[in-house]
Image (cartoon, rainbow, N blue to C red; front, side, top):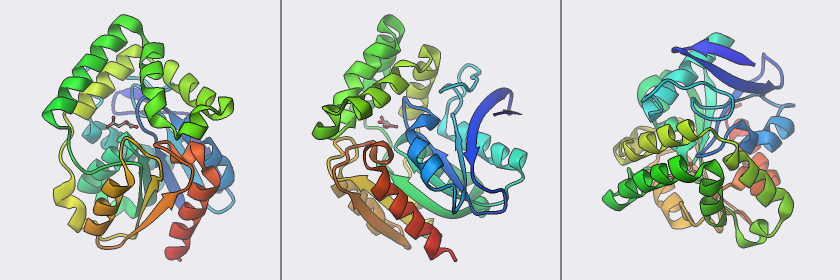
Amino acid sequence: MFATINGIRLAYYQRGKANETTLLLIHGFPLDHRLWEAQLRGLSAEARVVAPDLRGHGRSGLTPGTATMVQHADDLAALLDHLGIGQAIVAGLSMGGYVAFAFWRRHRERVRALALLDTRAEADSVVARAGRDAAAAKARQAGAAAIADEMLPRLLAPANLANPKIAGAARRMMAEQPVEGIVAALAGLRDRADSRPILSTITVPTLVVVGEHDAITPPADAQAMAAAIPAARLVTVPGAGHLSPLENPRAVNAALRKLMIRLV
Ligand code: MLT
């Protein structure tokens, strides 16, 4: 389905019943709603599960220079308006977590609970910022497949990298992203705010999830982030790397179900 909001067509996918709690699932970079296929399927009996493609990703549109975390957060608030949803459990993975922080800053009255998966609160370092520009140049020159090949080994736990079903799904999703979207997302990632100062303001029930083999946002970082959020619980996902919803969907679905039970 598509919603025309904030000057673009935003693609979104939903399962479950309109009168249930909404679980809003925000994917990472350079991915799309397919990251959450097992959650769309597995949690639709107990929630209304909504998984958008952020602008510049998947089948969503893009206008130049707009793929900031703030713009993504405003797009998601507009999507909730479009769907007639007041509050949602807001769950974001990696870049989706950065968007969730922006959403908390700008629309916190709409957050019933937060789930922060394989993400971090820090902004990019000087070195990381330069890396974003180098990756953007590579995307322009060599295309999305080159970015997918470069990123894949760091995204998955070693055993999952050797699993054609999991590795194939992750690689395909990345290789299919539009180059302009990748370039825009890299600028948005590079310029995002430091969210550490707002961690202590997060007063809603919060779940922090991290893959035990996450090499990009490792368990120690997740522990520190969870310790700084007043109502956070930390779940470490066995056998998973950075893409825990895809790598160990059963454990991630169980953790999200527990978060929902905390709310009743
Ligand atoms: C992601 O998975 O969204 C990215 O790895 C985030 C990042 O590069 O900071």
